[in-house]
Image 1 (tube, one colour):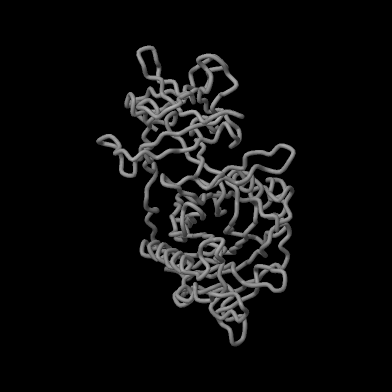
Image 2 (tube, one colour):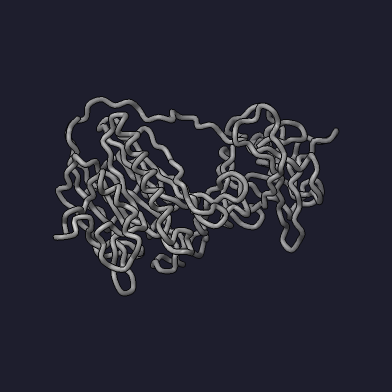
Amino acid sequence: MKSLANGKYVSVDLNETDAQLQWRLRARADSVGSWERFTLHTNHRAKTMGLRSEVTGFLVTAEFDDGGDREGMLRARGARLGQWQQFTPEYVNEKPPAGSPDESQVLAFTATPTGGAPKYVTAEVGEAGDGLLRARGTKLGSWEKFVLEPVAGAGDDQPPQVGAGNAATLNVMSWNVCANNNDNCGWSDDRAGFAELNEEIKRRLKSPDVILFQEFCEKHAKRVEWMLEDHTGRGWDVRFAPVHHQAGGPRIQKQCAMGPAPDSADRGAFGIAIAVPEENVWYKRHDLASPDPHEHEQRSALCAALPARAVMVCNAHLTAGGADFGDPDGVWRTQQAGQLAGIVKMYEQRGYRTIFGGDFNSVPPDHTESDPPNTVLVDTYAEYRECDENSITGRPRDGEATKPLGDRAIKIDYIFAQDTAEFSSCSVTADAGKSDHYPVYGTVRLPGT
């Protein structure tokens, strides 16, 4: 984030020893490092945004309880996305300065003190100013304008090259854990804490090599990784990707609701995760086309590479059906399924054998109940092999139900592999536990290349 008033990047002041000034934000840097990088988060569909500092790991807070020249000062010290950590963005119809990266955007943003009126965040860059950011402005001027610049990825955009792969057998599990704040699920206060989540996952493990999780909270990833390592005696990596909201500006990560009482802990962003062996050296999030970003979640796919095995694993949670989610006719889900297949094909062209799946929020093509549409995955079944395919006589593109409903149960969770692969087993444990989905398991034999 760069101040338009002085052309300097906003930096977190890590060297300040005064406890009341520690981690304050100042527009003072000429280049970008970890002190100048932030991620954007929202719990109001991008109508508000929080800024998490890369260097401190905490959220930027407007210090309205302080007095004098510290009142409203911005400091990267917030442990959760509360009122003083939520800013209202105002995207300005103004061209970013020459040389700004593509997709840069000019904005102003306000913070609101308890019981008070919104205040613009101002970079104090006058004669005696040192670029300090304070929420104190009552009108929009040059000191209140900033440029958001996207951060270029630090890693390789393409996965490692792979050679020939030996035939391999992998045990795959997929489970929508419903960990956010769905009152249909049985977590404490309707949302999972890491201890509860780990116990529920552990109870359902069947010698996994790969696990696909949906409706997962970012800050559970490392805890789940440690649990898997302790339980299996093997090294694991758990990779996470958020879903987003967007309201006239950049994509902003959707936050998981605060954790269960009594601590109401910040659980990070909301999204999907993949657990893979720790030989994983590369992973990537892909945006999926989604309904109106002002109202609906912008969904993602997440892929993780196992180059030593020439295997790429991808996970997705497609948009939910119904008018409330913006996709009553399955148009968006069909497009997302096609995108996911295209992503998988791209990795196959680089020599990877592929496995993919997740919660597709769609019934199979041969589903016979009244849960339309059943056309979303027609092309996917034509090109790939599904775990439970051919298990039901007369309905080859169907399978055991994974989603219990009040009067019936339907299949909406999937594990696919390349068409030359063979599934030696596929099963569903009809026990949702504290989730509202059953976990699905598949053992797949990938041919050598």
